[in-house]
Image 1 (tube, rainbow, N blue to C red):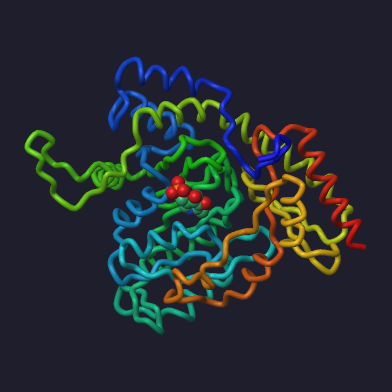
Image 2: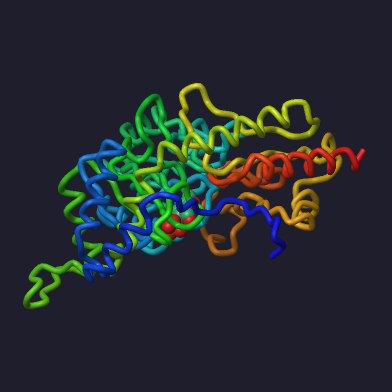
Amino acid sequence: MPSDFIPLSVPHLAGNEWSYIKDCLDTGWVSSVGSYVDRFEREFAAKVGAKAAIACASGTAALHVSLLVAGVKPDDAVVLSTLTFIAPANTIRYVNAWPVLIDAEPRYLQMDVAKLGDYLENGCRWEGKELRDRKTSRRVSAIIPVHILGHPCEMDPILALADRYRLAVIEDATESLGSRYKGRPTGTMGSLGCFSFNGNKIITTGSGGMIVTDDLALAKHAKHLTTQAKQDALEFVHDEVGYNYRLSNISAAFGVAQLEKIDAYKSDKRRIAACYDAAFESLPGIRTPEIAPWADSNEWLYTIRINAEAFGIDSRTLMRRLKDSGIETRPLWQPMHRSPAHRKATAWRCEEADLINDEALSIPCSVGLKPEEQTRVIDLIREAHKSAQ
Ligand SMILES: Cc1ncc(COP(=O)(O)O)c(C=O)c1O
């Protein structure tokens, strides 16, 4: 790795991480129980304004357990935006349900609520009190709004549709800690919300996740399932099939320290985004991220769109050029309706997501990105445009 390599998004470890982790090592509380697990859950719930939080081994584990406790059953259909990292689609399959993939809208790149409404109205029918997909006859039981790149989905229409069609809402807020929709923190508007603390997220625990909910019965069930569903700890009686999805005390200590910094990290992300916005304002062929009027985004991953004709080269050529200069960038995820892993999923009017995927490129925006590093990224992008003319 060259010494001036600029990564896409890496952790920033400048707070109490060492001292809290050392405390775990000094006291011997290193494994799956300990005061930091309780503290992380308590402080996280308070931070997002939820009644309960359950620490998990990963964001994927949080989503898996949330689908189970929300009552998603085998052969159900669960609605999801096609433009997402694969984890929520995979967790739908973990519970033997099937994703129904809805297109993304072109401005904020989130689930297109008009197409969601169209699917529920025209792609489904009522059978008694159950909503069923017209083609597959599967019961449609839940929606997962994924707040991609940190920007909130348009939740009011989603919640209204969920209410009208009696669907559980499980928010995938893994990328959006600190973001708000009309003042409401992402993750707290559905019945359950899930967060991730993997290495590239706005805060990290190395690997980890969290479920939040205001429903204490769901919280109790989620905690039970993440801790092997142990009914009698002494006699090892387990009343259902549970999972070892606990977060270790060491990871939780890491999380407590990171959570202390979330507000500062969010301002750093926004400062970085504002600087890129200004730099690219007049550069032809670059579309900078739009923030909806109802959104307060943590701007987790700064993602531009490159119009190849106007810019001179396409997003992947730009990616390779930047890589040659030691700068890491990344396209968005292959839309789920193109994913070989989900070829059997239902896709509903997925027309925009492919174009977004062709054009999108996430560029370096780590919390610790130095001004001179950001200037180098900007200069190289400008040069790439200039040399393509
Ligand atoms: C949208 C989305 N959902 C789920 C996950 C899964 O989180 P984790 O990697 O912690 O399992 C991630 C991150 O990786 C993600 O970006």
